[in-house]
Amino acid sequence: MLPTLRRTAILGVGSAVPERVMTNDDLSKLVDTNDAWIIERTGIRQRHIAEPGEALSDYCLKAAQKALAMAGITPDQLDMIITGTATADYQFPAVSTIVQHKLGTSGQMAMDTTAACSGFLYSLSVADHFIRCSTYDYALVIGAELLSRIVDWEDRSTCVLFGDGAGAVVVGPSEDEERGILSWSLSADGATWPSLYMPGGGCINPASEESVKDRLHFIKMEGSDVFKTAVRTLQERAEVALENAGLKPEDVDLFVPHQANLRIIKAVGKRLGIAEENVFVNVDRYGNTSAASIPIALAEALGEGRIKKGDLLLLDSFGAGATAAATCIRW
Ligand code: ACO
Picture (tube, rainbow, N blue to C red):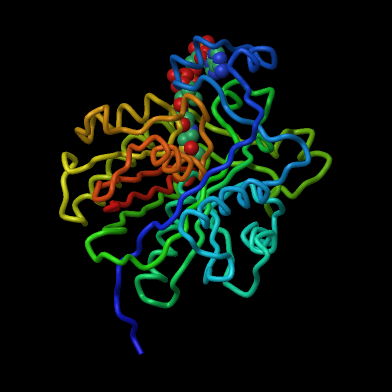
């Protein structure tokens, strides 16, 4: 029998980042860079870096526990665990299965999505559809990365940009039909893949002495290509998500874009016509945490009292493969 459609709401939010902070000055001791260049080109002042031996699943667990506590949901009540990440504990199984085990639960569906920086919103869109169709009631959706493990610490054009962390939300059926996830706009453009990827570790260049020597197991990026595509695509996704919800940029109370670069965030906010005070920014303190950036930002915005009941949130992400996603959420 076809299920009845209902609306999905975010019931709990949590985040966790490593204690260790790496400043721009710390980085200038590793590569030929400086605080002024990094701040001017990216807006980043510091990032958090995990200790050796720590796993992505450790941070997923901490973020998940906070989100579950806020939602008042126990791990056993979850029907689904889905994580957006490019830096799971292992190539397989999915880190979501390891998080499931660490949460002390079992049985529910658990999988990861590979959509780079859009991994969290892609995952949220999947969970939303399962819940809206009444297939499931509660889902744990995580965005998490330990990018420090795949950053080339000898490449100044990339190592200054990224940071580690995790964010999670618990979603479930909304009690109020007016509130929750209102719309989606998702896309990708595979033609762009060579501008941001990791060459080693897949079936084309499996790990070998040579692949390590050639530094293939690190992020490779054409920064200016990514920059231009990111600005255009983030604008497009946000506009379509708003249109799909029958809303306008001036209706947005808080715009939470992927935190990659302050210049990208400002350019997109300006193109959309959203006032600067309604744009959430924390890239200065975390760098680009890829799939983790939006749930970490959500957790911070809530903690700072910047999200009130009834507010309209616009979340917007862009990542490798030009994966992009935007959603309008009535809080
Ligand atoms: N410190 C000092 N100088 C540097 C550094 C550094 N860390 N990195 C590069 N430079 C130098 C370059 O060598 C170059 O020198 P040259 O002119 O002598 O050749 C100069 O600075 C300018 O380099 P550009 O690459 O042209 O600098 P740009 O203004 O484009 O900024 C940046 C580079 C910050 C990477 C920018 O292109 C960017 O942010 N791109 C988007 C990257 C991004 O956000 N990626 C992730 C989004 S998708 C996702 O999140 C997965």
